[in-house]
Image (cartoon, rainbow, N blue to C red; front, side, top):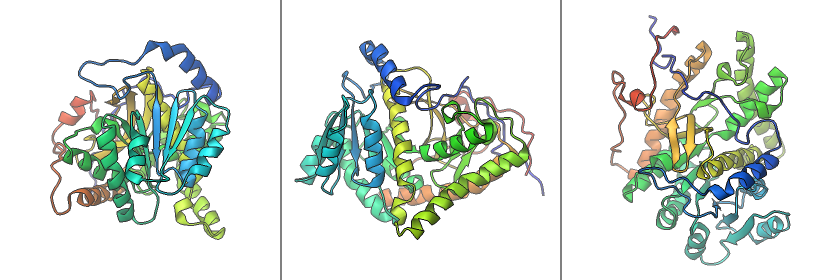
Length: 401
C-alpha cells in the first residue's frame, strides 16, 4: 500500500543563501582576521529578552576532555583563529605537554591548561567566564561517556550556565538529550544554547560534492539533517549550494560515498591497530573547530551565520531532537531553518533514520532521569504549531514511498 511520506512536505528553507563555516573564497585565517579587526569594536548585541553569552569583549573557549586526538586537533585549529582570545584546556589526564606545544605556536590566543592537581578546582578555573564550552567524550560505551558528561555538566551549570555548549561525541544522539535533561533538573531551560556537533558529516559531504562539481570545497555547502552518526545522518546532496545539478545516479553515488568514507577510515585504522575511539579523530577535531568558529562569529553578532547541528527541536512530531540547518546569534539558536524539499532517496533515508534517533533519544533521557519519564513533548502529527512557530509554510507533497 502506497502512502504519502510525512517527511516530504517540501518544507522550504527561509535562508536565502548558504555559507560555509569560514566564509567563501579566501583562507580561513585571513577571513577570521579581517572580520575580527573590522567588527571587534562593535561590541556584542543586546537582544530583547535575551542574555548573550558574551558580556565582555574577551572571548574564552573551554575544551573539556582535550587530551585526546580529537581534542588536540580541535585545540590546534582554534589556536590559529583570531576570534578566540583565550583557549582553556581541561582533562583528567595530565596535559602539560600539550600546553607547552600550543604555547610555542605564534598566536595572539592565550592558552591555559587545567587538570594536573585538584579536579574540581581545575574544572572551576577552566570554566570561569567561558563563553563557549566544547565537551569531548570518547569511548565505545555510551554509559561511560554519560558518566563523564554528568560530572562535567555539573561544573558547566555552576560556573558558566549561559555559555554555548557544543557536544562532540559519536553518541551525540543520546548524550544531547541527557545533557538537556540535566540542565532542566537544575532549573535551566537552555534549549537554544546546547548543540550536538554534526560538522564531521558536513565536511565529508562538502568534500564529495566539491569533487563532483570540480570546484573549491570552500564554495560548497551541503545541508545535513537527522542524527549524529553514520546510520542516522542524512546529507541533502540535492540541496547543495551553489549548484545541485546532479543526476539521480550521481546523487546515489554521493550518498553511498558518505558511508564509504567512514568505512574506509575505520578499516585502515583497524589494520593499523588503532582503537575505534581514534577513528576519524583528526577530522572530528577539525570539523568541531569549524563549528566553534561559527559560534564565535555568532557571539560577535555577525549576520547570517548558518550551521547544521543536532538540537532540541519539534520539526518532526516523532522526535524531540533533530539535526537541521540553524541560524545562529549571540544567544545560540536564532532560528531553525527547517527541512527543504527532499529527493526520493533522501526521504527514504530519513524514514529509516527516525526510529534509530527515537531509540537513542529514549536512551539518553533514561541515562539522565532513570525510570522517570521526560516531560518534553512535541506536537501531534496533525498539529502544525511547531512549523508555524518557526515560520514554515508546508507545501503539497509530490513524493510517495
